[in-house]
Length: 176
Image (tube, rainbow, N blue to C red; front, side, top):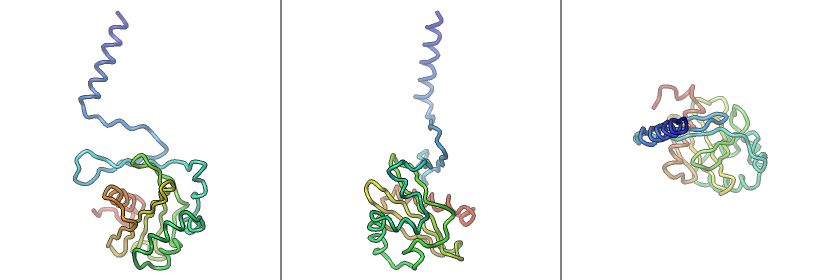
């Protein structure tokens, strides 16, 4: 009799989750779920994760990332797409801390964040580096205008927008 009750409860719970449009997400060190604009219930789920051993070399300050050959090659190709100030070319802008690793869209990226020295409220850059595919995507914000580099597809543009707002909350608070 007890087995029948437990089985019935398990089946009821399964049906609730199947038909109730419930989002279940595993816990990680830190997650940020932000709805995608205009797409209903879709979300971009960003996990801030530890660097795996093979990517520990990227756990450095932004300007030190350019000493790594694979990143330097990919980033160098990306900055050929436009005219950049020296702080962007050298990633020598003001950085809050070292690069971080994020997991999003079932992929891992190195997150590089910095802003223009002494003018952080006017110019910021977010760089995402995929150490597997050796691709770089970036958003540069200058005086309220936004520029994407590395030819990011639409879902990556959305992610870069979300990261820009999240990393520079004090600047973008209340703007949409």
